[in-house]
Image (cartoon, rainbow, N blue to C red; front, side):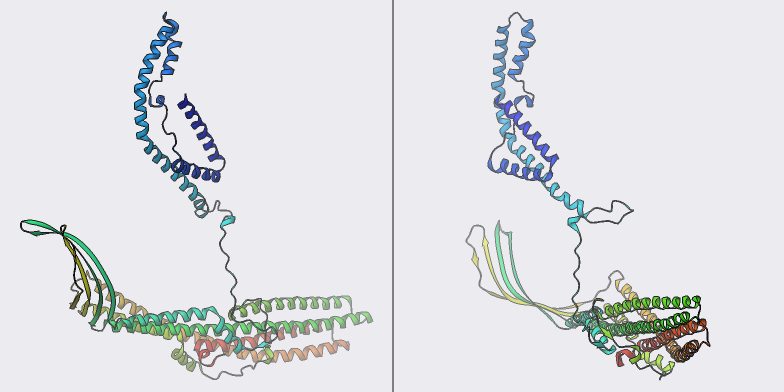
Length: 585
């Protein structure tokens, strides 16, 4: 009865245990860990089922069945029950010994199986949240994927610039170029790349020197030594601190070619660094002139708005005096509204250009600073050099072209290095140090030797006779790379010539347009003044004044655009020829 009671209690506990698994996984994990600790650390659990679970007949069950079946049909009644009960008690006594043996024998195995199962369950529970969060694809194709609330990606903090502009200071173009070269992260990227190539060159030069290393060697071994007519077991161990020297004496210039390759790569990285500065200078100049253009357009639109308001006031005054009609006033008001609309567009363009200039400087667009006006800058009157001179100067000093030339030289050095693989290499290597040995034979006492001097020197001549045509493949690859580099030099040379030609033509066209725009502005200003004066005298109509005002607005916009286009064209020509690195903005 005790066994049956324990079995029922265990089943009830297991049932409740499983219910807790379903209802809440995390309390279930804590309960599982606690029960595992209790079962295997603090107490011994009942792991053996009653004998009926092993298909052994139960005497109580048998006696009960006898009373219910045979006892009802047998005339013996209670006597038959007693006989049956006695027989079952003998069987129970005999089988209980077997139960005890089997229970003791299977306790450890059942415990290990239970521990193994619980360990797997704990591992799966711990891994399930990670898998569910980090390895899920978007649930649908119609909406963007959203991470879990507790697994959102980290947000990068805003970069703190090294330069904070003064909002009250008016910055010139050379000052802003200096700020960009110091603060723009692209210059640091190119600088670190050049430093890495310099370190790579140091690595290639290090191969010209010998290599010296300090080693501490310790080994032990056991073997059977035949000493007729017996085998003697010998155990020995050695500890030896040594210095190892390795030096390539002669390799037919292979290391020299590797140094030449590294030198060309370093020069190419330096030219990339210079080209980065050239691009940043032009980027700042271009953004600076866009700011000047937008500011000039804003000033021009403000002047246009004042002119439109002046015409509107004059029309309303004439209407009040009975000298103008209502359509004339409405036309003047329409011109004023259009001028105000153009002014707001110019203000927005100025803000955008300011953000572009701040980005070129490597600072936040929210930083406020002031620049010069377009009227304070000196406008070039002519181009000093011919297009042929500009092209020759670009071919001589463009850093991107020089970088390609250095890559061509590196390809030639790679061909020479690949050819040296067909020749032998003479090298010297050796070692020297101290050694102390411990030895023991059979069961005899072991002995330590004295410190002994050890050295080893070797002169090697290595010549690869066959390597599966790897040397031929490397040489073919080096030759193909050199032809590719030569073709790239030719392509960029043609590209440089075309870029200089286009920049020169653009600058020359901008110069002519600026002269025409200046003449147009002067003519439009005189026409507007004359039309307004004539309108006040009643000689000209409202339509003539509004037309003159619009022509003046167009002329002002064209003059500002022509000025900035000329300055940008001259800067682009200096950028294409490489003069920005020599003379600056």
